[in-house]
Length: 171
Image 1 (cartoon, helix red, strand yellow):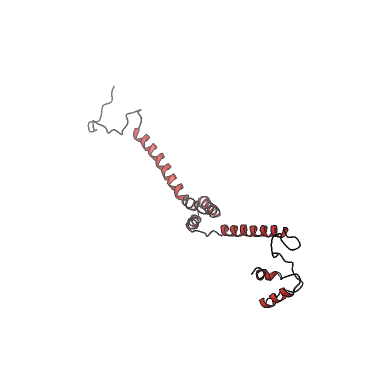
Image 2: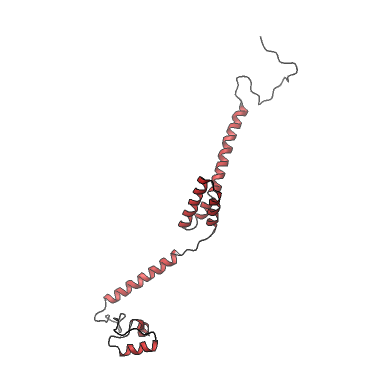
């Protein structure tokens, strides 16, 4: 026996209603859409979460590391103030103090090495081919703060000018 349809039921059923024992295509399509939507929202969230890292990546290494740590703290503790602090820190350009100091240090090393080479080349206080010595030993007289007295002392001192008068000697 075949079941008969109720006389008030529609004779043509909609497409999304499966036949008994058939595959529900609407359910499969919605499952695929839900998985894709959740992945897209997750990627959007992760992109937004790592926005301070991407901004700070162009700056100094220490600033990038601090912003990355703040981002991890915000992600694991769910305290959004860390994320905001990381974003603000990423947006601020911290001045680079290291490069000028490294250049100054390198220049001072060069000057010191040059001076050591000059002193090592001195023979009896005179460099070969030079008229005046660059390095003069410290005299027994106390150094004077007054420029005129120090030049007078340098003229009368048997060892030459005191350390403070090296510039006067070169003039």
